[in-house]
Image (cartoon, rainbow, N blue to C red; front, top):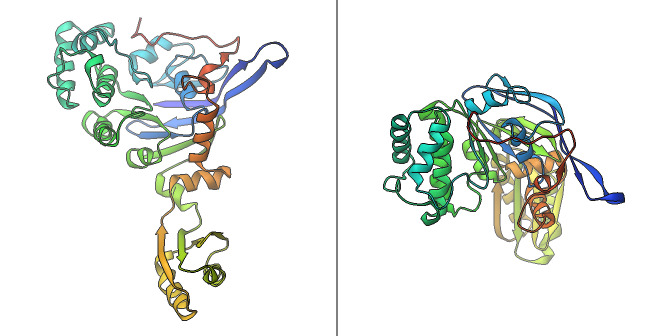
Length: 352
């Protein structure tokens, strides 16, 4: 469904002597098979949205090639748009129009008859728990309802490939969990291929068959969540000792099992291979040495641990850094810069 090689997107920032070239996407190779749910993971400014905008024909690649649903994004943009559904970060509905009218108009832009668009729209409203909201304006809907409406807009023409750009950003936990169910159903109930960009670790873990991690414009990993986590050496064992004088002994005991041990206050941490088997013996050794524990935690590797192993920094820290450097209004640096002269923008309006 998606085949990309050497995708590059270059922006220029600043003026005069301060003008510089920024590679928001720097040689991305990407393959997505039919029926896959792929999570595209990375901090703000990593190149997620820029890559997605190239794949959906909103940005012409500075270099490289990509085919989406069998069509070239640079030379066959209309055919690409006919074949995909797209839910952007900021949504696509007009807040002052009735939700049902917006959906029907969108379907008709794709060549559907009004009758078919109404029938399909009402079916999707029922499936995504928007029943009773056909004659309500988006400005009077909750955040979760508006995001589900955005998904309806992207599905109205029954696309075989759906792009969802951070669909749960800004939603409360209950609304996020509810939307997760609907996203998972796109493949199981409609047979759609789903390309999901997110910076939520738990979201990618829960929804994606395969996770692609991008950092600083380059793909740094692509595999299932379990396989990526298996790259991290061991489970994290966190010992909290009851007294300062026990720290050194706990460090030595844990150090016999873990190659690297970190101490923070009374917490002693290290990664232990097959911790479930090793911890009972560790506890016996600590007890024999007179070390009392206030707590012990054993945590399986997370996607953040994977990111740390691959890049040397935490994904959560990278996210915080990116957000801190975003310009006012929360626009990521990759979206706030000026495209290079070879870049052109196009409308996502349905096939015209």
